[in-house]
Length: 524
Image (cartoon, rainbow, N blue to C red; front, side, top):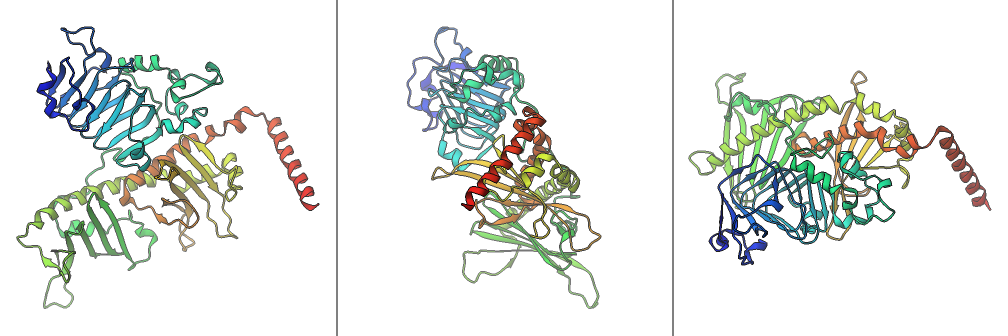
């Protein structure tokens, strides 16, 4: 770590970095290689002894940077940060500079960019539990399209119309870092008005957390045990992919074909088998349109008619070539790719088992029914198909409840709408998780919760069974269920807490009277 002239490091800066275009007279703090700093980084306090009263232009890290906290107070101008690798930290509260990350930005808790004198550029993925933008420079279109954005809650400056309802802030951030409505006057212009900036900066300087303990729906929330004895393409490992119940085998008739499909980057993967017959398992890989690979089980040729001696065979072909057929995987350049992808698949399948077991413990019929029995749920559930007054809005999500109606064929349902930002036309984008209580035809079977996923809005939208192979979406479904379970009693504060029993009865009487009057007027 040393101060050096800008001219000596300018060639290292990416072309889309603010500082590439500058010619600062002051030196730059340069750090070679991966950096692991124990103390929080105050960008206002980066001082060069030769220029003690001047703001150093920026810090350049030629590698990854891990640091507990990053913050600064003077948002009109402060030292910038350029990381040519990945940046990992607990919180970032900044303004008055550019934060440039060539790789991924991993913020465990809060990113808050304040004032229009700052800018955030991240070439890789942005991860954070809460992302607050109050006029800081960010790529709004990227956030609206969720391009490499893995953020649980976004409070962007384009949502300023909602600043009078700080629900997200109050249920994510510790109360000692927030102003109450009584502390503020009637004019609230920004999310910043609710935040006790000085107290937050003081907490970061002391390396303290500012968030409450809330669920984190990010992928890979824990390390799951490896489920295979080795990483090889063996008969036992292939057959294991069809075993167990993680693909709903216990709710699907025997001999029915099961296809589990998912993608990881450009690689498409499909596990296929007939339920109850692990010898029928095949695994298909395809890398874009360039090449495909197949792992299958074949019966060995034998003079004994009832021989059960099987072996694993591997093949490849080129899908883009007309008439291409499967060829044995022998001494080809694709064999190495198959080895790598197979090992990834076994790791992914092990994660699927761990996530499935987590789902079985949490998203249960008992927990589902406990939620559905709550008075607020019963009240809202009666209005499920009405356009108004049937939804709970809470922390960037919407919750709906449908009561069971056997005559109409409606199973009890919980629906969670998760806000994803704005689309290209400015409309709000959501994803939907539907939790339904189901039971197999066998009268002795026990009810269970099935989860469905919907990406588009409207009754004509496609709804899919949420498979555990989606991993991230299944984890989100599990953690959103936990969140709902934890906070369902808290959300209906207006009716359940603030209003007395007499006030609630009065409101119900007024509603009944209004309905009566509407009925009379409608008959005239």
